[in-house]
Image 1 (cartoon, rainbow, N blue to C red):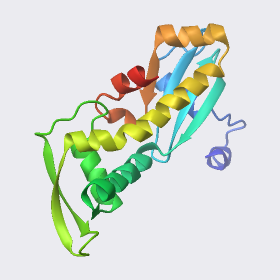
Image 2: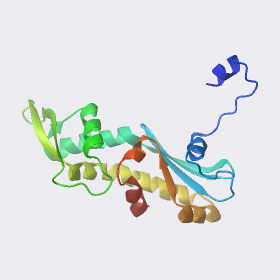
Image 3: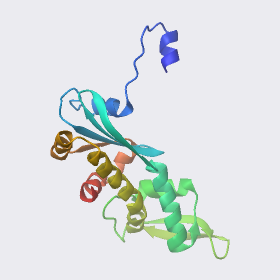
Image 4: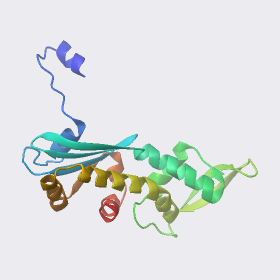
Length: 186
């Protein structure tokens, strides 16, 4: 990006941290002296940052992100149903039935995979509550990262974060009830 801008004639190309760009995009007052927390749930990882005075005060990186959620679903289906599915099926299941909290026994989706005992393909109905259970571990890891970021934040800014709340961005922010799940866990 920098090289392209310089080739186009720009004299200076300052790069902005991703968390700061996300906060600006969300309309947060990043220039204020109060503490703001941005949780960016990306595909490969979750970045948790505390911002103040247009800069990053502290940052935690939690591996996994959306792809970690897919891996958790693959593992859950393997352990609970003896069914091996691929990442595309797991992603589809997450997008269709995924919820951070709740999930009903009545919301069902049929997934197809390979039976781990017989080795032949089979179909299995999976409930939304199963998807919620599979996502519990990765969401707990994000909540642990939030707590670690708050512990590493100066007390005045940490109290601002508690008062102002947390902004969740990225593709994982689309998971229904993620805001409530993280606030209950963190």
